[in-house]
Image (tube, rainbow, N blue to C red; front, side, top):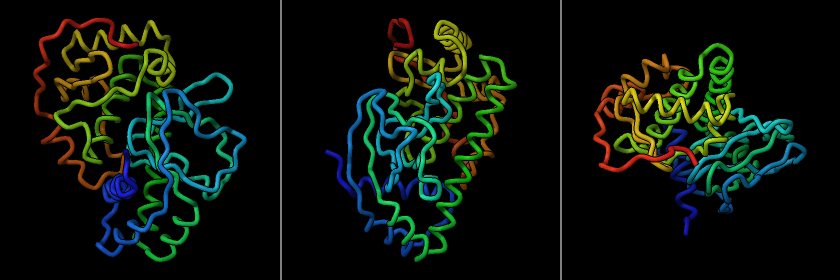
Length: 264
């Protein structure tokens, strides 16, 4: 069972990856009221027409925004993220917030974020930086779909997710649970499911990563980031050098398994 303190920890990890917060600031977060909820794969958390009075903090798994018309994935969120932070200002989501695989979230009232922002300029700035990081990721998402080939798109998306997970203490040993089914990856990169499978097979052939069932292991960060032309500056992380230069460059030795179809 997920404890409420875990919700505070994941949000604190995310905010401190963007801004320096004092012990007093973090103490304010410990009083965060929340309701813990579990969602199955592709289950919907918010509809386009909803008018929520609370925000969603991702605790485990991944969430995404999907377009109502064609189901196109327009953004992906990892633990510590608050995908609907903007509903504090614009209450209508404008798209569908759904789970990618099973997910655990904390629902936190808008009022709490308003109160803590008023009480702490540092927390207010951290929340603003979180919203700015979301906008920066969206701008990069547009570039990814508009001007990069399919191999670069997939590589870039995997690089981004890896660094974002590292920023909140996840993806240890360069391994993490895949957020994607074959159709999800295709939707996120605007390619067909068959082509998505071929692209991942090519990344494996180049020994940039290993993708076994629901686990991704990056075996050669330099090769993957070169293919992606990945530069993480747009993520706005405070400790970018420690995320890329030391942790991500260590090689992965894959387990001795027979690899089958990578995406299910």
